[in-house]
Image (cartoon, rainbow, N blue to C red; front, side):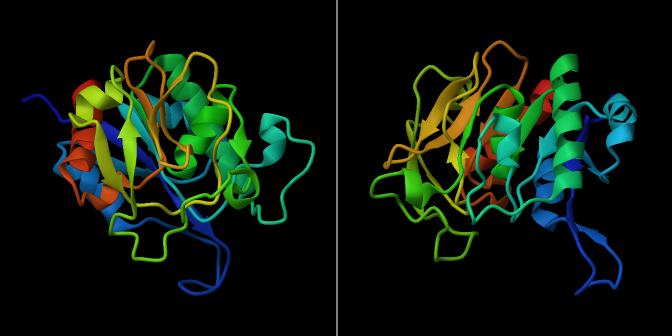
Length: 237
């Protein structure tokens, strides 16, 4: 029997409080459910940067998840840090090690929200540190309605891998971010754009599967979201 592909999914981390008096990991169930429903076997990855190579030996593809924190601006050469920026240094170090290793092995890779932003930085791009300060008349990218509902559309760029996957020129997405891609990484292309001009998706067309999306397709409120995970699993098989 052919085994289904194993998909590594990065965890979030929290300091003591709430669930435990000790530091703890967390992940919304819909991330692993989206992988499983698409035909993959999700395994969750604790933040041990020194074990990145061992993790990469175990998986066939990587999903870098989102979270309520930001990429350190020093990683993309910014001289100052915006007051709104919050960091999770160990998580970022781990995810950066995983992304770098996955790229070196040409493993299929999907970056979601903050995962897309870190992917862009890992490939040499930069970020907008706070959308309201750098984008004229921006949309509410930190949407007021529940994250499981769409808040705006994005234009899917014709001729891109994402366009072939979702099969639509425009899709509705959810939005939960205050940062975004600024300069798209060399070799990559923007494949989804919000009505206010904010880059909502990137991809590296030279790689087997290397896509980042700014929204959260794990909520799967549309066919396009499910197709993104299905395409990842197909690339990893």
